[in-house]
Amino acid sequence: MAGNQDQLEIKFRLIDGSDIGPKSFPVATSIATLKESIVAQWPKDKENGPRTVKDVKLISAGKILENNKTVGECQSPLCDAPDTVTTMHVVVQPPTMEKDKKPPNDEKPQKCVCVIL
Figure 1 (spheres, rainbow, N blue to C red):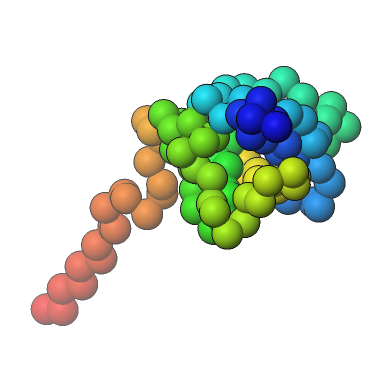
Figure 2: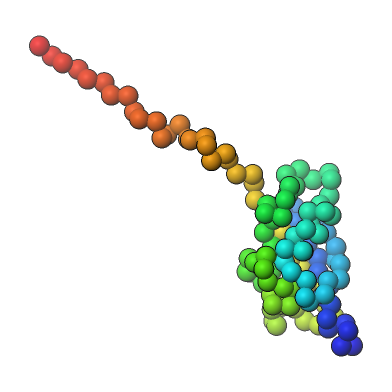
C-alpha cells in the first residue's frame, strides 16, 4: 500500500471536455514533465494544440501549477483522496504576436491645421 501512495493517477481535461489519460505518475514528477507528456499525447485531430511546454498551463484545485513544483507538492488534501483519479485542467495559450510588430494604434495621428485669413 505504501508503494501505491507514491503514485498518483492523473487525467488531463482538455477545453472541449475530452480527456488525456488517466495515467499513473510518481509524486516526485515535476509539473514540467507532466506538460511534456501532454504535448506528446495531444490528440492529432484537435486544432490549436500546444507546440511547446510553454504553451500549456495546468490547473488543479483552482491553482495554476508552476513548472518547478512536483506533483506531490501540488496535491490538495481535500481534492486528491487516495485511490482516486486526480483531474487537472489543461489550458493552451494562443501563440503570442511577434514583439517587433506594433499595433496600428501606436502611430502618431495626423494633424489637420486650418488657417482662416
